[in-house]
Image (cartoon, rainbow, N blue to C red; front, side):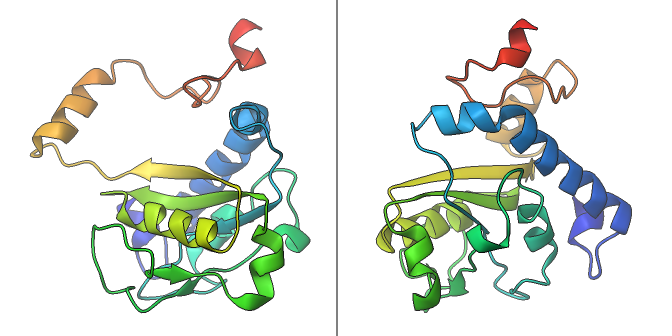
Length: 180
C-alpha cells in the first residue's frame, strides 16, 4: 500500500489493486448484492482530502467494478468537515446535486483503497444515505495494519491462511465458488 499511496503511485501496485477490485466484484459481486437484496445502481469512491477528483488512484479502482459503467458513477465532494481525522462525521463529504438522482433509493457501491480507522468510508456512507441512498455497500481493498497496535496484532495473528481471491468476503455469503 505504501507504493500505491506514493505520488505518483507505483503503477504495478496500482494495477494489482485494480485487478483485486475487478476480481472481487466479478467473483463475489452476486453475494454482495444478495446480502442486501438490491442490485448496485451506482459506484463511487472515498475521495482524498488532499488530492481528490477523478484522477486520484482510488477513482481507477472504482472504475474496475464489474457491471457498472460511466452512467452509474458519481463523485463525492469534500464537505466542511473534511479536515476531521479518524472520526465519523456526516459533513465530511457531500453528494453534489448533479449526482443525487443516481443515489436516490439506490444501492451504491462505495470503494476505498485503505482502511485505517474506518472514519473516511463510514463518513462517505453517511453522506450517501443523507443524499437518499437506500443501501450502501463498502468495498475496501486494503487494510493498513501496525504490528504495534494490540487490535491489529490480534487481527494479523488470526490470519493463518494466505490470501485466496476465491474465498467469499461476504460473511453471510453463499458464494457458489466455495462449493465448486
